[in-house]
Length: 483
Ligand code: NAD
Image 1: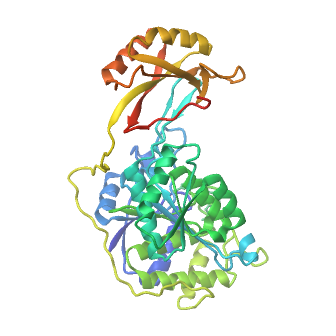
Image 2: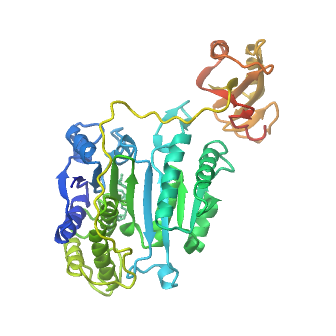
């Protein structure tokens, strides 16, 4: 079986060589096709950071094993790491954080074992990177949380939790504040939970989760989160088990999956052969298990655990009184420990049974759409306008444009209502949201909204516009703070 390998930038080539040496020494039955991705590919003029041949190879084999890659600064290009995850719809980012004997942490010293799997949604959220300056003072990032996207990652998390016989699956969120976006994610979580009655499913507000993970990490098992919150929480978990050098990551999609370490290119130590290859090795082991190479994965994992237990370390961790090994020597130590049994060995020791990725050549992009069950109608619109006037002056102008179909409901600034009621102590920026709704219960048309738009531009620069929808009898937009 063939997989695509991108060595990456910075320490990437050094740690990739170490890991593939370990795989080869263990007789892992894989062939590697090296593909061109990363900083030097950007520098050659490929704006997405990969060559067409690299894309072709990855789409042919369905598996990419990659080293960390640098995003050139100040060139306006997007991260190739994020592009790869999004292009191939690797919707679930799975990161396993386990106590490793020999890697001292506050918790290992206290005898508290950690085994947490974070599943982070990998496509949506603010990682869409859809950002605009609305005025010279005001920037906006769009945060998409979708029902099909949430269902995909949550379903994966439940299925994975069931397979690993997890005791608990928890949804981390901020639905108390972001009622529609995080609220939708949470709603999907409990919808999927109904199909898995054997799993204890619960939820926790993400700030509380951060605190509890630091105080009682052993209470958590599988945690599923939206993209940005998952990113932050997974680095927190890396800290619990010894740092980024021990944090692996698997980006799972239905057809293509990407395996990489959580850490970056470590430019400060690149080229010195001193980087710790453990995180990339653990990511590689996740890849071996993903394709069914269970026996190879278990033997290599046991050798790694035995090596760590015996106090062997690279410079970034371990006992400073004992000399550290370089990357090559560390890999050789693991190889020399094949067949040894650590205290808490890898389980289960299953035989290999290769699963090839389900690849097919689609002739169109898959449209993921859930069934619409509620009648949708336009109740009004939010017009985001640029103005440095006082709220009452804006209201006076807006009321002139309301006409027969619209009423001006309120005006808010940075989400806080400043008209018809508000506080003189609310600081303002030069961008307001003026909210108009229908005068009666009759639905508005897009023509009604565009008529109001044309009228308003007589007085204001409109930076952005959102429709206010009713879905059935549910309000599908948030109220302003203080409304
Ligand atoms: P980093 O993870 O590269 O480094 C942070 C610190 O951890 C550094 O001190 C580094 O020496 C150390 N470190 C990281 N990995 C190590 C290892 N294996 N062994 C020993 N020490 C290690 O983070 P950064 O400096 O913020 O980012 C550097 C570059 O990496 C940036 O261009 C960033 O965009 C990129 N990056 C890429 C990925 C990816 O490819 N998935 C992820 C994160 C950052």
